[in-house]
Image (cartoon, rainbow, N blue to C red; front, side):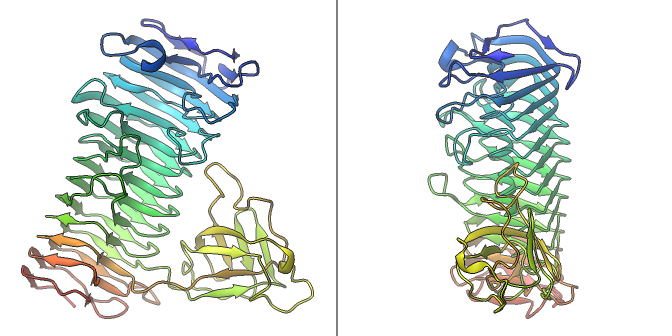
Length: 502
């Protein structure tokens, strides 16, 4: 038991247990409700940590940290499992960290360090989802200068309050560091899966990002310094079934590259280019999407809502997107029942996958319900849930928040409760430009839909608010979509379009 006061760590001291479960450090603060209690800490603010005052040559391995009994009066970012800064030649191996009030593994400025086999579950317990920290694995970067040699490998982050894994530049006047690699990691049921909030040249290889609530992979100004990553490479990853977007990229000057990934079954866009307020707004230059399989996403396969300069989109298979094609639906009464993560209407005949990503509304009145004696919607308050997928009669729903086992805030709704689902938006394209795109190179892509019905309405849509200037669009297969292969509400200017099937 680590009670009421964390352990101040120092160089040369390692902590090695007998394995998860066998060795467990239980954190608690019953006598100090304002005191965050990580297992070990050494920080700049509390202890003057820095390049010349760091921790060196330490190993933390083969144990568990249980943070369930730490409760602070207000959310406290330092209520972590481990909270060390400025670590040199560290090794963190085979750790199981769970139920912490803030980030589980929250160590910053890790030089010549390896983080391997760390499992984090239900961390960020007191984080409402939009505070600092609250992640499974959160690593601040930039303190050692332009190069931080860090490897994060074979780690799993599931059900954490904000991110599964994030890298975050800690001061906006620091140089984003190179040298950080993420390999063979898994992020599931977090708010964001893996996020690059300020590294340079981050390598993300062979990872899986599944069922996260906002995005599977994110580059944006969400971090404390509002600095997005740049120069990163994401290769050989599976980014599937996230309730929001598969890949969300913005607030970066570029470049960034995505090669050989599967981006599928996500609840909005497969790839979304956009900028958040408060971060970098300049056009992202040299974004590359190459040899990716982008399919069965709810809306557009690729959506550009922020300026791109010199993008290269080549060799991708962009197929069967626009799955959110089912019309508005209402029901209630006999045959309608809810489970913790589902709604079933035995009388429905929905297009499979056609409600993916929609917001389901229940209660708040009986409009749309069948006029049956057992309809119970009239007296219920309205609740909402996000649909992650559906069959002809059953909706699968996202948990209310990361780590939850139900979609409902106040218990499962009663049988017969009235529900409604909104209509589907249109058009839904393989590639949509709704911002300025200059000098694009779009070559050798197969942008089509072989489904029944075809839900990807167009291969390419240039929206009214877009400009498409120069570049080349050639050698693509644009045939076989739901409607015309291309739709130009704003005509492209200059450049060359040729040899595109369809």
